[in-house]
Length: 481
Image (tube, rainbow, N blue to C red; front, side):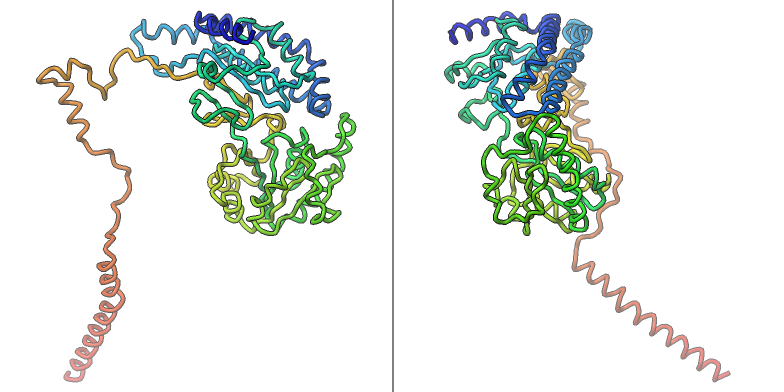
């Protein structure tokens, strides 16, 4: 069955129908209508499967429907036609990109429906066929996802599988793996996401502490803090640490009350790691929502305590300066942070974001929906609006109609004398344009030391001698007179 389905989808990719713009519009519109009409069932399913609150389920539902709208609005028939006929009109099409044709998706199991939708939208917009792998254990979300593809989309181009094909079959697919490196590294077609990177927050002394406390608390509690974009630590300037912790306690009470009203229990630790910190925590460090604040005394503890990272714990490290925070997050040459949330005034935020190794920075806010996202794919620009974009499912295929000024055609090379070849050669010999900077000073330190000695020793002595001699001559002249 799986082999027959793979054969069908490869045939569909070869006939090229998925690259037609009207086809893309029909598929996106049908998918959006299906999700909209089944939104209530989807929200109930994700609440049951992932312990989402009503507000969290509605947040993700709004996000996934908005993603469909974004991709649909980006489709432009006139623009596509203009690009398609550029060569016919004697123009180059340097920015041309083509669909990869076949995409195989292994979605993150947590939040599976929305994770799969984010890839599916991008595949449709790019004109790529898509196969989504479902986990072995069925849930309400997997049932709805399977029905969605079967009822809303072209079954010869989009479907689900429960059995993974052989690697020699997947070699023809772009593999989008939202989990931690399932496939062998030798598969060059993999589009992997980083599973080891973490997110962090910084609260500077210039920050709006009330806003910072609300956003940090929200990022640590929404979606049970199970997404990779939830910060595992917050670095607080020591001058505002006490006030910031007090604000966390204050806002935690209202957050816990809102959480109960939305139909979800307070924070729970799905990994069962909360008790590992119980011995080192004071009662005051346990917030009303159940979040535990672990205050670290040294910056090295930030990374050596990895075994204690859990959904119910937030590490807190006091810093003395901007550079102290930078050194703490850049320590041990770790890979780039998945995300950095900075709470500071613009000048301080610029400095921190510039020197901390991170894939994306957010200043004075945390986008709620990305807390439920899987890690964005490596090597592609991050967007807070869609997890994947159309270019992710495409490859460059530029078209050039004529040589550029810096190039020569074959005729210029075959002629013994060519004005264009000589002109290009003479132009290449010209120096690069000036950067309008003054010439560097003499770097000979011996000469500079000798000159400094002349200025500091010889010139003062010479001046004193000359002055004394002049005074003596004037005195003798007056006396002789």
